[in-house]
Amino acid sequence: MMELLALPLLRWALFSGVVLLIGVVSWRGAVVPRLRLHLGQAYPPREYPEILRLERRMAGAGAILALLLLPVWGLRLWSQLQEFRDPFVPLSEDVAFLLQQTFWGKVWMAQGGVLLLLVGGFLLLRGPWGGAQPPSPGLTPEGIPREGPRLLEWPWPWRVVAGMVGFLALTLSLSSHAMSVPVNTAMAVGVDAGHLLAAGAWVGTLALILAVTPGKNSDVPLLGIQLRAFSPLAMAAVGVLVFLGVILSGLHVHEWSVLWREAYGRTLSLKILAALGVMGMGFVNWRKGLPRVDTPVGRRWVRRSAWLEVAGAAVVILLTALLVATPLPPGAH
Picture (cartoon, one colour):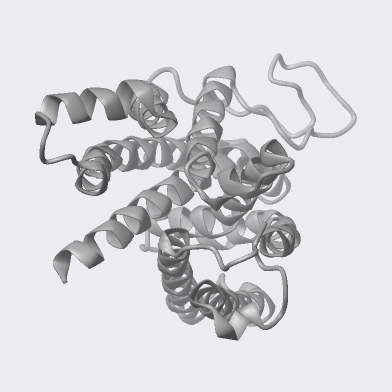
């Protein structure tokens, strides 16, 4: 029984960790520029250190997440060996063949290398290589006046780390059902990776905002300002998530009856229903929570309801892990 649960739980841990890592870099790339704009409009420049402290906490969270993913990554090799193992040859031969002669092994080694680089990269970002003192919204990073702030204003070390996180997401797609699409495999892998990136930009960013933002009262309402800056990203990410999810479903499900007749279809149906429920919670949080998030009572309500949204997303990720392990229905491609 434990062996049957081990592989889906490993996938769930890996998917969840990557979603959260995507959330870290999405926060820095898409939320922080808008956060600076909100602070620049409502608070004097001396409040900008609040952003710097948040940025260092986010980088520290990224380092911890990448470090925690390393044992999960190692256990994936163990689980793959259980399926691949030939009892009539030495274990070392099986390991060498799996790593050197299979595409899965090459992808697995690339994942490990990227995770190690991410640990170091996030630790550097937490220190002097992290964010510099933010300029006012009307200035470029060099202090040159401009008419309006650019949406994406990343220091180059953050861009490098974001690229590594994107590559890590791609490696998950390279071992997914997208690789079994016989025609336009590259397109299928790209759609799958985009689907994962959108999920991370939405749920991963929200989870990190809740986890990293201090719960104590502050002169600057950091939670409310971050959630308002996050809302446009969340809406765009949900739109991309749904659009790419429909394409992925169409690639693997050839007729409607598969959704209730085959094991893959039933698992997919459960995932869709759970995802719709999470989106519904997000809509309620957006409509009812944001207007009162700056009050003590409203802030507590928003934290509870947003954590419920994240918990629902964790269930969706678990269903995704089960879906990856479920054979495709006959005639899918």
